[in-house]
Image (tube, rainbow, N blue to C red; front, side, top):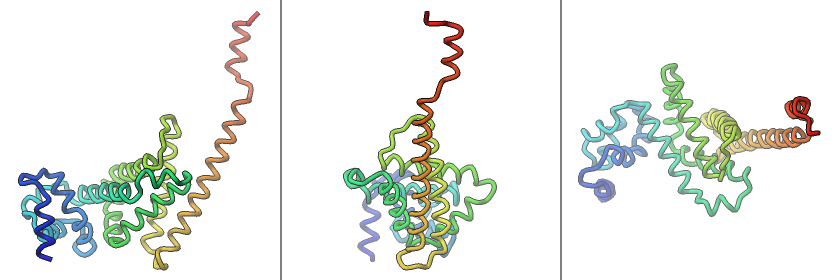
Length: 228
């Protein structure tokens, strides 16, 4: 254990930035939060485990619990990307990509499920709801970007809003799922994504039919400016 602590401390520069300290500590902070909550005790224990000065660690998380949770969620985003590189995702259909990305997040969070429960309780406080919405959007955006989405129109926003809702409801099921390998959560996710894909197919068909409908604006324009 001692050699592990030394190695972790030595990976940091001699004069590390606060971002580097947060990145080095956040996995341990999240693990400790299950027992000690998202507070100074979790940070202090993480600093001790990683061989990092406790005062520096405390300075890195002066934003309190919400900043710790924000950093943890960003860590999950990065870990998800490392587990599913572009060449692996590129071989999948879009539905499979989104499913794989959400399931990767489940696997990453699984050891710290109680920490997630505590984090979501903090984010559900009225003063934290705007930050919670921002974090949900960021997770959905990260997944769509990794899935290869390049939309810049309204679809850019609608896709993220929809996935954010799917991800949020899936996490709610995940928190109380005692089935083996969280099979119930995975089945719930599959049903939600199936519903979304059916809706997207219907929406695409509706748009296609709309392309052939008469345009009122063009008709009025022709009345005002006849071609002959």
